[in-house]
Structures are given as structure tokens and as C-alpha cells.
Length: 162
Length: 385
Image 1: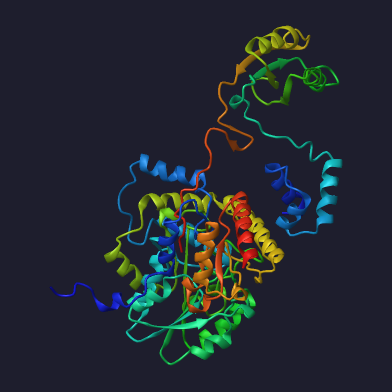
Image 2: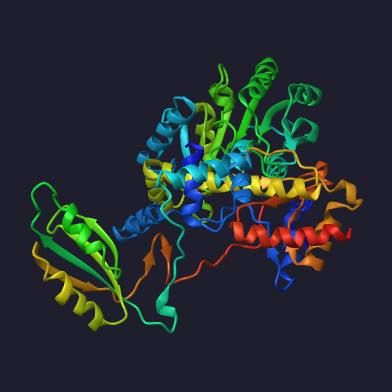
């Protein structure tokens, strides 16, 4: 594995790590790591540094839903045009083009069930090219982005062993 | 009443780790860098196969040597990782951890009074197992100036007409030392010249951070002189499954299996099914864990460098073995004070042989978060010394 991939593997799990520590972990010069990070950002490989938040444990209500969307692709543009019209809404957090029974997977975040329903009814379903939608509300997140949300790691090993 | 205990057992010292373990247990709120096992859970797909085997009712004994499919997987692994051809029928069998294989090898090969060369610092069980098999253990003290590698000169110094087995414990617990191909070639030459056998404990073989681990059995003329011991505990984070294996010449394996069949019958069946999955589909897990260990290894070495604590760079297992001689304390005193004053447990080096005195074993089978907290305590401690 190259330095690049090694850096990405680490910061994908921990984006708060600083350049110095990163350079220690992978055994490379600090300047080299800094340059590589800059290059990764410039090339759009690193697209952002986010924090994973389990909002359900806060006082703020958030509702997430997955929406399966069937659309008519437009000539010359395929699905890109319609995808763009959808992802421009700020309440949409993800849009994927899918293989299989439907075309676009739209993930949306809202304050309430009504707000999400309103978005689907008023904005999404009314787009010309949208043929149908199926909305699935997320009831509980067990694991997200590789992190288990429902249980904390507990070290059950004997405290000293040969 | 007659004395119920045989004198051979009484004379064996209890493990130095055990003694320390009891002190640690009495210390409330202690954090530890003292374990000799991975912090990762066994990868889920491996656990799942174990569970599935139970669901299917695979709850019977296996053959004494272990499941045929597992022995075949071990043979394939030996071929792809070391280029050695072992016959899964006669040259491989499955044991209850690598530790059972160590015990069996001595018992199968030793006549009373035969000498066994044991390099130290090393894992705690070679010496007692040799004694229980009526061998005379002869200790080779490894030196930090050689990065705790074994040299041909050190072997030659201790070889006598009675020497039969050389124990080769690399990658090493507790030092983290490795033996590279050139080092092994020199040892192999002496072994052949002096007509010795090698018990090569390669349980940490997959945790090698410089080059890929090389087994001495892969060198010319050495397969027929080597009992290669390995297992699933360290590479696949499967310590509690108690599963290992031995590979070697048919004449030796046959006698080892004989003892195994009377003493143990067979290794745990559930574990064997899980291990088949580990060898078939576990490479990515091993690589992921190795990468994580390597990050932590570099982190710790850098911390010791910052603290001005001398430590050679260990390239294997998951231990660093820094020297604490400059503080003018014994390893025991150092570790006891560290535990009492900072509530941090590490293992005194002399638990792994007298020549480990003046060193401590620090395990990096812990999350980075744990390591950082522990190093803060460590730094706090040595600042006051």
C-alpha cells in the first residue's frame, strides 16, 4: 500500500489527527505528509472533514429517510441532469445512481416526518422526470460509516497475560 | 499423610507474570499495557462460521490430528506463505493452541538428560515444559546490542554432545525481535553441523513489520529438522479459541499425535471450523490488524525517543522492550512503583528470563486512545525519577 492510501485509511477514521502524528504513524517525513494531504485535497480525493454525530442522543430532533426514485433519463444528459436538480436541495444529504429496481437513491434529513413528507410531495414528486417515489423512514441507526452506534467497545481481557 | 506432590513440579518456579498479575488485580483503576493478546475481536465472519458449525450440530470429536479440511488449509497456507510443502495427512496436526505443541514436541523428542537450548528473554513456557519432559534447559542470553537476535556464535558457545533441540522463538515475545533470512541461514548451518533439531515457535509470524516473516524450515535441509509451531491466536485474534498446529517430519509428528491422542483427544471442534474460515478468507483481516499494530508500534517508539528512553526498534509481535537500567531500579521495583504511583501496569522483563532484568515489556495491543493515556502516565512517572 502506498503512503497515499495509508494516509487515507487513517484520516477516514480520524480526521482530527494532526500532520505530526500522522507522520509518526506511517513513518514518513512531516513535510511529505503535509504535501500529500494538500495534493489529496486539490485532487478532490479528500472531499471534506466531517464529524459523525448521533443526533438521536441529543435534544435536537432529526428525521432521516431513504427515497427510492424512478425517473425518465433525459436525452444527452442521462441521469445527471435530474440528479443535479435533486441534490441542490439543502435537505438532501446524499444522491446515488443505482442499479436494479429504481434509479436514484435520495437520502434526506428533516426536522420532522411532516417536513420530509412535504419535501417528497411538493418538490421531489412534482419534478417532470420523476415517475415514482418510495419513501423509507429510518427508525434506528445501529451502525453508520463503519461505526457501531448502539454499543461501546469494552475491553474484557485479563489485565496482564503472558 | 504422604506428600501428595511430585518434586519435579514443585521445583518449577511459578510464572513471574502470575505474581505481577495478582498485584495488578488488587490495584483499583489500573490501566494496563500488560496483555499478550490482540485487542481486536475475532473477525465476525470467522466467529460466524464457529456459530454456524454449532447450529449444524458439529459438536463431535474430530480425528486426533484435526479436521482434514483444516489440515489441508494449513498446508496451503504454509505453501503460499513460506513455500514449504507439508503433507496434510502425516506432517501437520492441530493442537490446543501453540502451547500444547511446545509441550508435545519436548515430550516426544527428549530422553532424560538431553539438552534444550532456550534463548531468553522469551515466552514463559519453554523452560518449564522442557523440565517436565526431563530435559536439561540451557539458557542462551540474548543481547540488546544484537537487537535480541540469536547469533550462531551464541549457539556454538552452549552446544554440547547432549544438545538435541534449539528453541527458536521469533518474532519474539517479549522483545519484539525478529530473525531475518540471513540471520537464520547462519543458525541453520550450525544446526545441521551439530545435528540438532529446531523447535520454531512462529506464533507471531504474521506480525512482522519489516519484511515478510521467513521460517527456518524453508531453508535448504531444514524442513526435516524443524518442528514449526504456529496457530490462530495472534494473527486472527483468536486467543480464546485455543487453536494451534505443528508441522514437521512424519516420524516426529506421529509420536506427538500419539501423546495428543491420549492426553487431549482432539482440539475443540468449533474452533477448527472457525479456523478453516480464517485461513480461507482471513487475509484482509490480518493485513488490517498488522497495519494498525504498525501504527501503534511507531507511535510508542517515537514516544520513548521523546522521553530519552533507549529502545531498539522491534520489528515483530506487538511488544516494545525498553531498557530502564538508567533509573537504577530492578524491573520489579520499576513496575511495582509505576503501578502504585500511576496505576499503569506493564510487565517486568525478568518475567521472561533473568536476562530480561533491566527491561520492561510494553504491549501495544491497545487502541491509540489507550496508548496515549498510558504514555501520559508513563511520562509523568519517569519525570519524577
